[in-house]
Length: 106
Image (cartoon, rainbow, N blue to C red; front, side, top):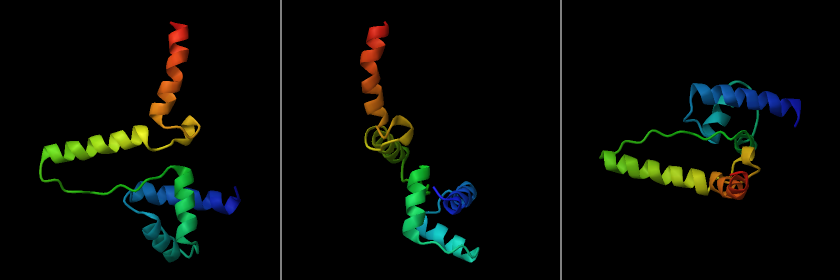
């Protein structure tokens, strides 16, 4: 990874902490205002490597609707999203891979 990319990733991280709702397009716009010329696709690639995800505010009509969306997100996070810290496995895959080792240790 180049020093320029590392510097850019630090700035993306700072911006994400300030405004967690910013996606690649908004980040590109902000970086261009700071005279940092970089493309949206490159930003999206770096964001993916960093594991940064934009947060979106959403109004719900009821608590049950909010709970359903949260449950759907947690299901996706645990079964559909690979994590670099788990060797690109999902948390569910990592847990299931660990079960035989736990059974042997017991």
